[in-house]
Length: 251
Image (tube, rainbow, N blue to C red; front, side, top):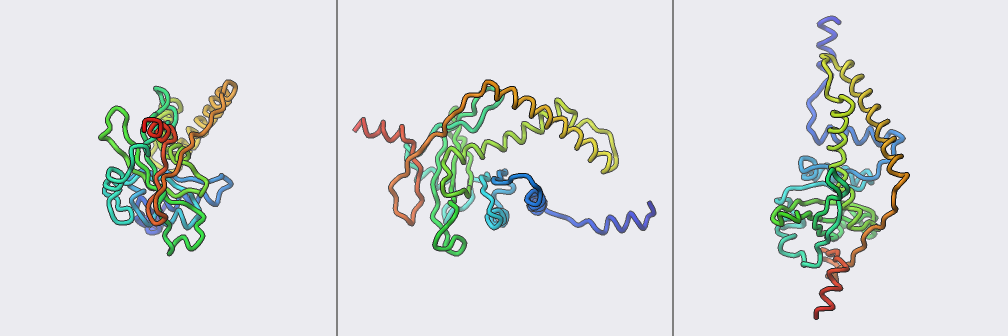
């Protein structure tokens, strides 16, 4: 390739932020035949209001991590959770299975009031703020913002939040089992071919493993939750039904 050709190709490339790259990836996925319903991401993307607005504009549900300083209708999300969440709002739910079994945490979730400018008179989606608290270290709390279908439950949000760990595990598994990171190439075409074959091999193994699990799979049920009685203009905490019953019987 001539120096002119190299210069022309380099000139066509422009800088893109992580948020812009993420939006481009999502748009590419939406044009594919793959079913796309939910998006989950870490704080780097979740704290970007433009990114969340982009997902809502494309009718995508999401559960994204945000920093504790994230403002939610004024106050910081950390302040709202610690100050407003009643004790019975915390539910012990699993965010999915891990190497050592189910990943249990204490979760609190509240429905947020609609924003008329975006939602109109009849919202089709519900926004949430969610907190995940470590059982062993209660001071360790992670925070999320979510937008979901009206019928979505707290268990649904927890399940989607836990999917991000699955992505990390997928990368690690592909590296360990299929040599995803074991390439020695200097050009994009060679790298792309290696990555594609490694991911294809990993997908094949994942399908085989899933089929083996399904042979002895036991169907489960989603936990349910109650809704606290709060004014319509305020947040609406989802209460753990077992905690509510315990409180009622001790009075």
